[in-house]
Image 1 (cartoon, rainbow, N blue to C red):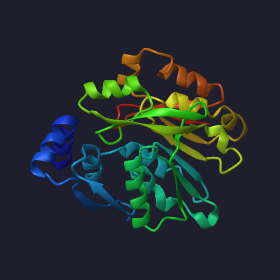
Image 2 (tube, one colour; image 1 turned 90 degrees about the vertical axis):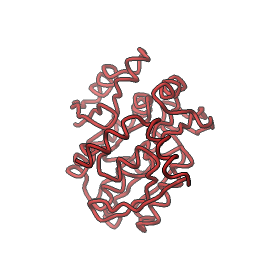
Image 3 (cartoon, rainbow, N blue to C red; image 1 turned 180 degrees about the horizontal axis):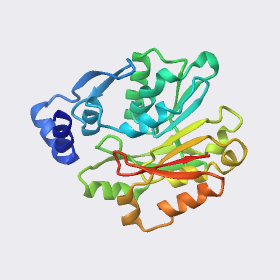
Length: 267
């Protein structure tokens, strides 16, 4: 019953944010959260997304899928890692002594700091690597639109402006260095990938054409957010993402998620 109530009050991110400011004027309002695997997270309960995470109603299906997939020796790429909710929910499955590693990519400075705080809190420096760059289809600097609502920051101005119409605000615009998945072929190529790039997931996938041919990850999870596809009406849509991954021998399976729909590509 409590989870249902939390879902209801956090559905309107803008309204929740205003209410949180009223009841908790100090910013932020942090609480510890003990994950099911025993790790701790430091969550800001004035943030609607993190409030949901506090009550275990964020990305449950994705976490369940990853927990049934990851092996101790795997390299797991968390692209758009946010504050590490997914990474730390599966961190117990990875063993650095067997060559395993979690690699987090998060260009939003504030969220990356929170991600690093949670890494230090759990003493996972040897298991978790954090990169400040974003992933895209080519290398170079791009504008990053940082949203007030945690987890909604985007490299796509149209997506950011549409997020404003859904209740968030652009706090500021900064520059993020973008790189391709293919650049990591000679470093530590991933066994499993999770992508949540707020409208740029297809661009991230396109940056991995060599990776998918030469050293294909056995599982790739990407976001297919229908409200983004519907309003953009551009090449970045579910169908072309699927066709692109089919060309490398992947099959697709759709699953529900916090964002509405994710797609799982597997060999």
